[in-house]
Amino acid sequence: MFYTAGTMDGERLFELRRRTFDTPHFRGIEFIEVEAKSIINHVPGSYLPFNWTINPYRGCSHACTYCFARSTHTYMDMNAGRDFETKIVVKVNAPQLLGKELRAKRWKGEHIAMGTATDPYQRAEGRYKIMQRIIATLTSYRNPFSILTKGTLILRDFDLLVDAGRVTDVATAFSIPTLNADAWRKTEPGTPHPRKRMEAVRKLNEAGIPCGVMIAPILPGITDDVAGMKEVVRAAVDAGATYVTSILLHLRPGVKEVYMSWLGETYPELVPKYESMYPSAYASKAEQNEISRRVAGMVNAAGGIKKPLPHRRARSESHGHAERAERRARPEQLKLI
View 1 (cartoon, rainbow, N blue to C red):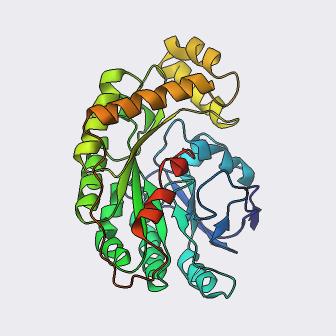
View 2 (view 1 turned 180 degrees about the vertical axis):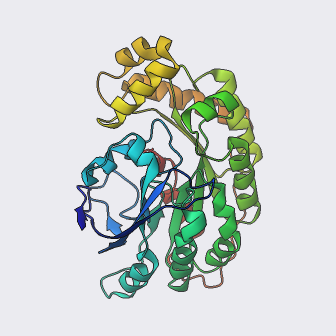
View 3 (view 1 turned 60 degrees about the horizontal axis):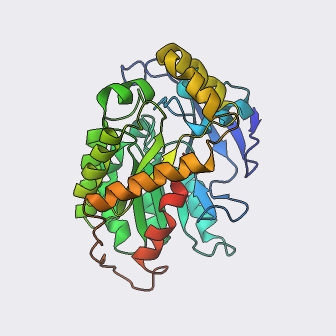
């Protein structure tokens, strides 16, 4: 059957089969294997610092309570709650499509951002290994790219990323909203431990692969305490993060209903606060700016961001300079979360 997804790119997916795997890691998850008609998706408008994305999966077993991408499942006649977490759409032909699209005369070798919707290094990637082949393909065409993730599985592809960085612009970023174990377990139950993510930030930067940290989304009343944010900032600076940025939670229709239901069960005392803060999808500009100002001050107090060493490149003509790729993958990309 065909799914016609009501996304910005009008994506069409052809369902091949549905599979389950009887292992503890995948128990309760159904994988919907599909063929996509295209894999490099155009982002309309100019409100983001990149024009092209790749998303090899739809749905996400990270099960983050606040995930903005939850609403995309409703375009495929599934719900934004449990279905989003347990019915994972896998674009099994993504690497082959990518090679075809990179070869096309109309393709100009522009930067491609990954992780802008669901996480490419969620649990499914451990079985399907789609990102391994995507990175190898992008490297073979010397096409610049960036990856935003919460998945320490990215370290499986460490050598591939190092190889890619020798011939093109590569940037990475981790979303680490909190280091508080209780808040992490309640809000991001399917993700790797945040301290493991911070270790990955350090390892990538030490290898010359630029990696930033996004303290986002910051959840009012849950992860917005000063001590907790300072802890994340200090750890990020110590890990050599190429930037540290923050984004206050936003709740779009579809996501808001799921999140508020969870909030009522888990933090019922906070419901009135959220109802006051979120009459629409976003908190007030003043509240957003205050969080950004506080985190920026914490970064400065922690010693600031150290400028990374220039990354050696096999060919200097490979689509510009590393700092340009890093700039494109910076805080603006992270506003998607």
